Length: 169
Image (cartoon, rainbow, N blue to C red):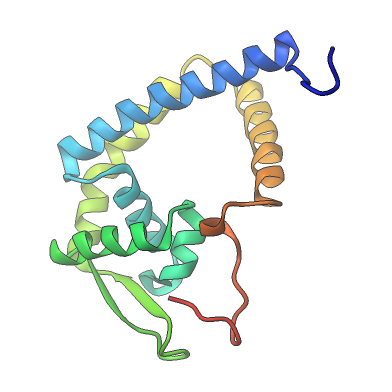
């Protein structure tokens, strides 16, 4: 192998192609279900789901951007769309007026309740139905390792920001 142009092994290449194909096929089916049932894009669903899991149903915009690995400007647009639909509200943070806090509304909770059963069914059927419990354990472990490695040098949208002295949107 040429050191100047390292290559992937055949196993690495097979794993990479399998990961990208699984991701594309799963995302397509999940996005269709989310659009059909809740009128949501995948990113909008991620935002609502993260808010649904957050204490008090709210989170800072920058923390949401970190979690979904989405640009701050793109997240601002998606939050505006959700706010226009009455699914979230946005307000200055009581701790830091430079930060914006997004809160899930009752209507947002209703949309989540409508899409979650089909979302869970799609993920179970499409991703997990052909795997044993041991396979799922291995998949979670391996993807967790890959995620953690990628988060060591994340894109700007996913970098943790310092609180206090740094400007947060």
